[in-house]
Image (cartoon, rainbow, N blue to C red; front, top):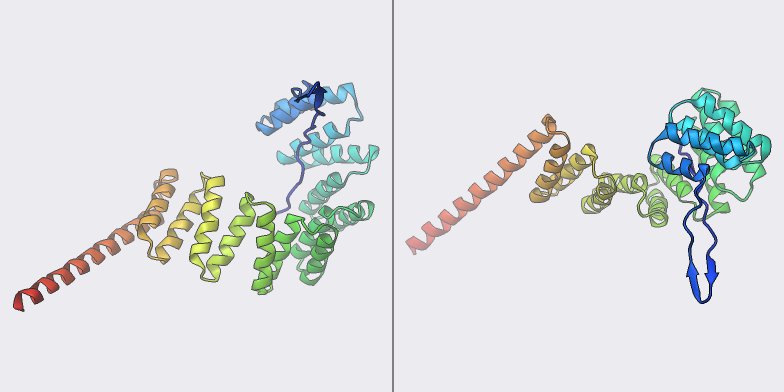
Length: 299
């Protein structure tokens, strides 16, 4: 899936210095800022209205034009979104407008146009790793794995702390069964963005594949804190703990899953299997105790 960056721009206001104290003023009440607030609250209709009012005041406001494009793209209205990104480019060169146009073109099967937009963005902004990183992802989707790997490396050569490029390169290397190198890059992505659930889950998946179940559980637990409503994640955690025979932890995660979706047969079956295993273990324990008691009586 193609990710989009900087869906909303937030202005950081300059501090006002009065005497020896530093006062930070409240955000300016403007149509643009209200649009950002509505967007963050997922109220897209109100966000659009505020951005329209901002554009009525200044039709060349590229921030408002860009955010209008993002709102429409988030709603799947790609043609309308493309119009706003193109309007941004009429006024200024903008890397993220080109990236989003490339995403729209690629979704429509216009692959040449998509690649062209990304190459133009990379050429016009040679100090940004973003367009190259997305270009590498498109190359990977097209099965051009060697080209994609080189493109990710070019992106990291520009910005060694570009987390998305580390993540994408790591996933590609795992696909090529270069496991140690792949994990190294995904770990780097996690270090750069410790609360990114996509990166954490990818790391947990690789730990699980390689049999490092406790490390896998740790990564997945971190995801569950960030995304507490994911039924599939709690089931997966239950499965991991079950493999480790950490039955109490497994039961806790399965019950969390059932609290979200209580009619899932697999999870109910998994809970019953654990209770049966615990029952069998208790029976074996009692038999051993009985055997020890009988032995003591004969002595």
